[in-house]
Length: 159
Length: 159
Image 1 (spheres, rainbow over the protein chains, first blue to last red):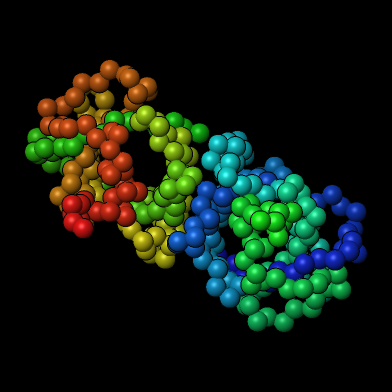
Image 2 (cartoon, one colour):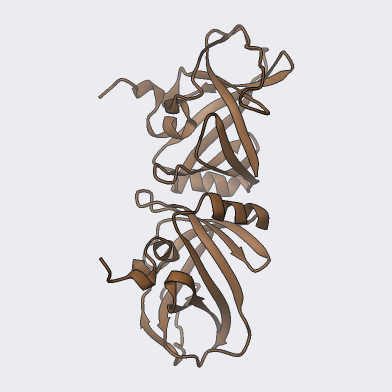
């Protein structure tokens, strides 16, 4: 098991862009278990695909188990089993002050949301914030991708 | 994707036993999604382990995607993420009339349930029933392993 420990911020502006196209991600959820708190994600990332199990989130840290799977399987599962909600985004990897930030530019019903994440060895590890990040949303569960699959950003605030 | 097509029967008696010990299975569910109808199973089968995604059941057939994973990962997931319900059983493979039957002898809270399954190329494929099978329970969803994890056999009928 890996432990996923990360902090998440909103992104304002385009300063972080370096001209690279990023990698298109399409993902959906087989389980975004309200009860167990456990999430099972299917992701196609460029030419690769993964099945990922995440434990309940607690203070920015989650158990994470990730396995590569055939892209054709992932495409089928997205189509047939994740119809309830999918997320599309383009992921950019942006180095800043010795760490790699992942900047996710959401598409579809989650546009124009842009979020930046940084993975850390410990949740209280020192981290220099780039000038292009805004409010921290690590603990705001609406910004989890599983939540965005069910309740896309563009529909927030609507009844 | 594989298509899992099978029929399931109750087993009466011990005639099917050939003296082999069978393979111990321990499994649990990361999602037994009432909503999506999609199931994600973690299984330790002897010295192997698997993560398996199954689509909704329809007339004895289900989409199935199965991936081998490290046993240590599976043990951890069973312990940490499947606490809500696990199933223990010993699986015996029993040849009969040209097909292989899987006879599952349940333990723990599902004892003394014994169920036999036969996988078929089509749901209406001809199949000779062994003399030791009883009532067919293919369409009785209480007998799915995901249901038995939540509502074990020994508790049926209790309020």
